[in-house]
Length: 421
Ligand code: ADP
Ligand code: MG
View 1 (cartoon, protein in one colour):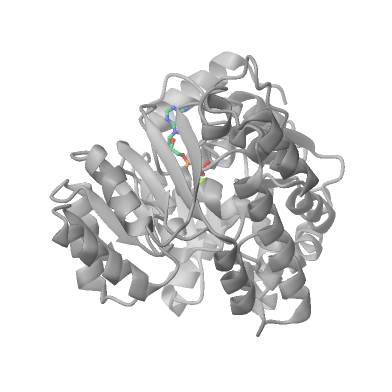
View 2 (tube, rainbow, N blue to C red):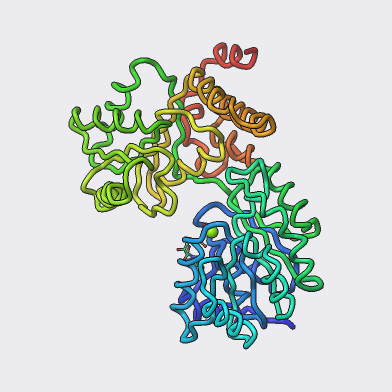
């Protein structure tokens, strides 16, 4: 069954109210509608959800969406229900439903009302659910956050490894769509292998963020003074400062306050009420700065964050990209500053020493990339994009001048020494 561009655009408008596709969405959606396996790699905020939502709404049968986060599934289901008069158009199937609710979900699917069924991987593996889903029409299976399949990703979930064999039981040739914001070649390989989508067409968006400026400073005992100076030079602007420990978060927030910077701390050790209070103060601009552990940021959408500082170096390039990615969402200035000392690397290594050997090996390999990033004298942007398997043209590329090394190249001799080291 063919479809034309008019169909696609009018469906986009009808269901989502958008008049244009973003980036590669249209090409992805066409590929999905052609019943092909599809692999989508786009940075966070790139618009991956629409790549399965729209074709699901346009096709016969029910699309199964595998996602690891119950809260995110609920948000998506609510949003989809908002565009339809039919409440059953989207459902979540999970262990929190009672018997009556499960019956309703199954009825809606059987009646052809449900276009999107969100499931956590552990629910999909349940025998009774497999048996039921075998008996209905499944349009395709979308595996969101597909990096969860890989130990090289930042959120490995063993249940993701079973997905392929389950999809095979649901019917013949059910198309699979894998989606992730993790672009490292190792993770990609794992996804393709484990989902068995070797022939899938790959759609990969650029991870370049031209408006972000990347800088690394050597961490010395004067870090606090340096940091305060930076924040004061940027007073009135919103910024996030990431620290490794909760203790450091609280200390640093206090030091900033004492020095006249409006700042709040944020970490998972505060109760929910306190956390949401501090988060709101930052979002509402009652304060300029939030000092936080990595617990802060997931799903936070503040478009005008002007700087992201890492007081402590992160454990992977991947995390660094995600965390700095919260700066300059509006396309305006975003300064990403990381403080680096090899001592911190050793600290992170020590943290891992209690873990299983395989995990340690992966952790150390990721950490060595961070060291290389911090110590490089080449364009940081080029380095980071290369890590994501992307070649960046550092003469004509978008954002080519936007890092410390490019703006102030080290003296030749010094750079040569770096190479020898
Ligand atoms: P991802 O999963 O890639 O992180 P999302 O699917 O959550 O991204 O989408 C990010 C944002 O982009 C959402 O607010 C979504 O509504 C918006 N969006 C997606 N597609 C379009 C579009 N074609 N036009 C305008 N906004 C879009
Ligand atoms: Mg998403």
